[in-house]
Image (cartoon, rainbow, N blue to C red; front, top):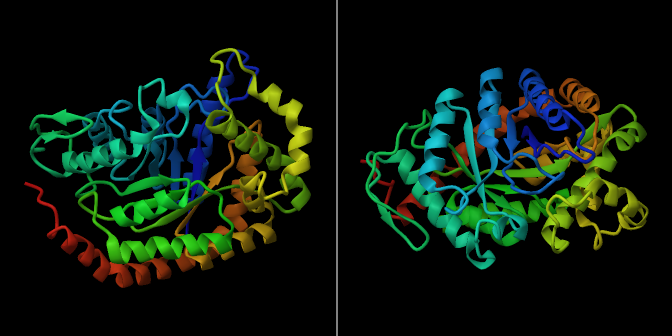
Length: 394
């Protein structure tokens, strides 16, 4: 099992002079530390207009900066908005290939479309068409990176004449593709299209196993690759924070997780947001008493109920991760930069994780990954046979 870090650059108010700069500087320090400690991935999301919750509006810049400061860690868009009204497919292909060259072949491309009207309405994207827009664009992004020249495309949501899209990425035919998944239907779509599943549902291990088994079953039996290669992997995102004492870990990281979920609900389920007139951190503090009353109720705050188990003592976190490994999770991505979680606590937690927990998982990952690749190879061949063989490059 592999491990990564997820960044949204959450920046609660008040925004005094330098607040955003401080957050960006801390991001870079955490990325450099993660690389030195042997973590496998960083993932930087893309969101727009989500004040306080997410200030990572230009992930390609953040990832390019990380590429210059790191040597081994993979650089993931987690995720790039795929509908053409957000990002034209040709611009995404150019960006991804450029970043792959700058980073010496370390890019992973996660795709999504957002479920928040704050973003969708601003870019004139109908909620009921966003997935169709995404899949149409993702397939052509793969073609643009792999084909020379790109033969052109006349689709429902965008059209483009024949062009040779340059540069081409180091990773051939293109970097691994992932799909953001917040519910079963999108997880199953990922399997059917040969994309890695990035699951943002904070699943418990028992539930994760059920979804993972179905994901791989669909990959084996129904996959029609959307790209020129496939990426059968399941990545689970979870709140995280480890300390030798459970109480210290909870005191340091639980409030950040609560704000993460509260602000997520604000933008995705809470109705109209008033741009430039809200103070989410202040409102969160006012409502926290009620939040604490219900956070153990899985029907009220399911994400907190399952995700908080990634926060605790070394023994608790090790067992949580072992359970996920046994359930078939391929990668776990830690959400740590939440609320007003302290930079120094995040760094201390990562160092403790790398010292006490990471080595045993790294040792097993090499063996398990080799066996997995061998087991899946016939199904990869079957997937391309369903679409008439490997896609034409020239």
